[in-house]
Length: 222
Image (cartoon, rainbow, N blue to C red; front, side):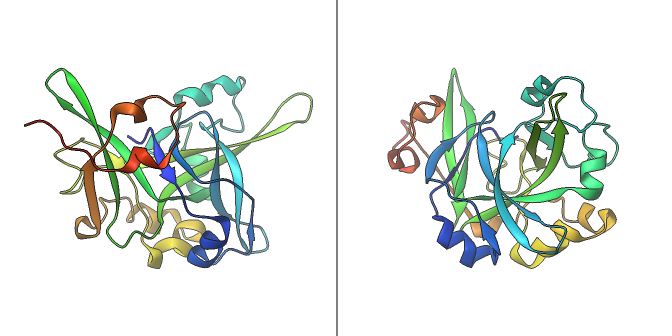
């Protein structure tokens, strides 16, 4: 699963990296949890690539209660085409979620040790996601997003049994606008040779902590 990540790139850097036509303003963050507004890349009806802030926790357009989003932070890539909460979005509303890296916790005895994973190139990565638009009775529009997950690659496997779907640059456009059958083939572990991982401070478990020190490597007792 994906429950926490970092994005310390600037809007200008993302415009260049992802070829954005429009980009909302945001501040670098090192500890982004579900239930908050996060930068999301979508394709507009005019075919432009745009970045807006969406709420992390998917609320289907037909949902009666937006509170359901708190339970739908992630979607298993193997079953999104079948699950009612995700299948319509998988067909029509896919997105990319830029990140500098992400955290996962490894059970080591009675302790859960967090690790930070990022690209060896240090360039921002793109998680594959789904988005939805939900309309309240008063006409207010709530746009939400979830992260798709898949089985782990060789870097992640010693840490956790799931990982985010990471979409490679050559697949970005197909992910946003391709046919579902094509996109389904992209739901696979990321190229392990391009990822790196190291243990980090357990402070990342506290959502109120959000600073560059969270991604610094630490020594773990043997």
